[in-house]
Structures are given as structure tokens and as C-alpha cells.
Image (tube, rainbow, N blue to C red; front, top):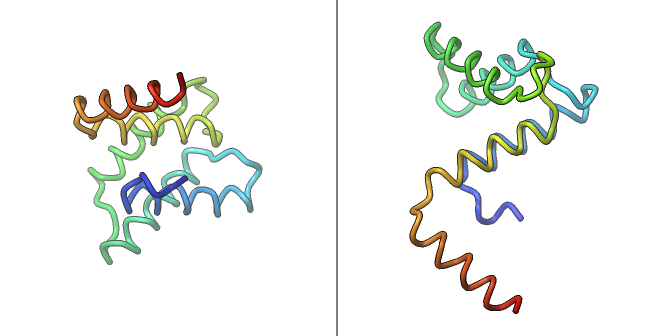
Length: 105
């Protein structure tokens, strides 16, 4: 499960899961900004700057793959997974995948 994720990714996912329980399973850009701002403020004790808010708006546009101006759980999860995978060393990932494939065969 979440054991392989870094702490920040776990916090992001947990916060979104909690938020989506109270919403209609989709998050608008405004709700996304509110949620990410709350995560940042809780973690660092300060509000996002205007530049940071603009980055979050651009990030929302990237996550919203179907351009509905709302993101659903799968769009968010796909983005988080790709972000996590892009930060991992490629060689160790390949070796882990090979080990998994060897076990499965």
C-alpha cells in the first residue's frame, strides 16, 4: 500500500481522500487550490505565495487530463504516481521490476 510512498505523497493522498469523502468525488480548481494551500500551511506554517498559487493552478491543469475543470481520484492518483516514479532512480526500479517478473514466472 502506502508504505512505498514518501511521507509528503502519503500526506497529499490522505488529505485528498479525506476531502473527496465530503465532496462529489471530483475537485474543482478552487477546491484543489484550497486543499493544497491547507496542506502547505499545515506543513510549513505559512501561506502559499502568489507565485506558488500560480504553480498550483498550472499543476491542476496538468492533472486535469480530460479538461473538465475538475479532477477525479484517478486523475489525481495518476499524477501522484508519475511524480513519485519520476523521482526514483531508474536502475533500481528496473531491477525491482525484473525481480517481480521473475517471481511471477
